[in-house]
Length: 634
Image (tube, rainbow, N blue to C red):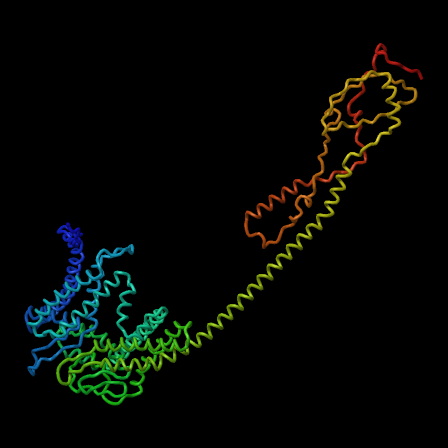
């Protein structure tokens, strides 16, 4: 017996042609991403190289050749990505770290990476799904950019400013990955799914608050409020730095002139000050919040006390540091900045939470304060860093102190303001609603009164027009009745006596044509013969209805205007009714037609209508004697 066993088919492997097709389909997106990332890195590096070379060429006494200038350009490019540099050529021979990153200089590489990732997706303008996958575009841009970055770091390692390899491995990929991710996210229309996946990594309670069915709107309100508060804080810090620079203008000018004597060196210092303006704004915000910033180990500057390091390098921005000593009311006035930021944050939360309860509004205000504190802490960490060893190891604000102070200001100011705005806003909303309801009611009552008044006026005019038409209609009817011909009733006896001899002596004439039933022949009155007159036999001439009853020249009276159209007044209607020119034209045409139909009143006459026999003409001649007529003698 042969066992019948079915062989399980093995999974089909793709052929070589299918693999080539897949590679060919996917390779253009990955290749485009690699090229885009490399081009973005090259553009940023090239821009800094051109700037450094221009300053090196314009310098009258350069310290090194073009190779040294290129090494400096590569080191500055790495510093723009947050990579800490190490200066090996120092007087003490100990390498000194340089970790203060100019925030304005970091904008260029971040923007280039973001733009490269967005263009690598190759999304069309019609909103159709992009042909290149998000992961493919992101990986291509990141790998291409990091390839150029790795080569730049290896080249900069042989210069006077060497990159720290720990910061190169951690800082450079982080900045590139985040910038490329935002670019791809923007190209796909900023969907919510990636953000939700990131928020799911948070603890359970926080995740439920942020990802609930109705919590997304509240979270967005908190983010907008926190963004407004951060903008107020940073802007206020920039204003404090500007005011202090103007107050210490002489020291700033002296420091600017003391650093270098050539115009190329002064241009370089000026460009460095411009790139450090965002850093100075964050330092001013930290000063206004309370913790201040550090100008060396153990030396802090704040609104309550200022203790900068005694041996600071001359620099125009450092000249704006307040003088050493205890704070004055002018220094304490810097607290207006976080106060304004807290009020702004509370206002945004209160206005956005009109439909929430007071407790929920307070919770959202606390969440906004947390987001604001986190943002300011990150900014403070990026704006500071070491500038050497020893005393200059701590230079700038401390991130955790700034974050804690921002949270305290937010909870202490933003929460009460949000609650007050919520409560007062509810009162104001109810008051506005009541006022709007009363206004609408009054307007409706006024409109109804005007409509009733217009209707009453129209009815009054219609009644007046009918009253005026009634006498005229009565007069027209009376005139029509008088103008009608009276019906003459002939005496039956005389007519009988006059017609009997004629019937006896005359032959019977032929019967005339019978007129139609609708047209009746007019009645001719028969007159009795006078005394002494002999009646002769004559042949009656048949008279047709047309000849016997000629049409009357009078036209029959027409019905008066009120009978034809009782509902239409003769006078002009209410002016408010005419809202359309077509209706007015129709009304005028109808009124003219009614006037044409109304007959003119004729002059009444008492004369009776002429008899039919008289109008018919003279009587025919009497017949001859041979007709067999009889005659009588008087």
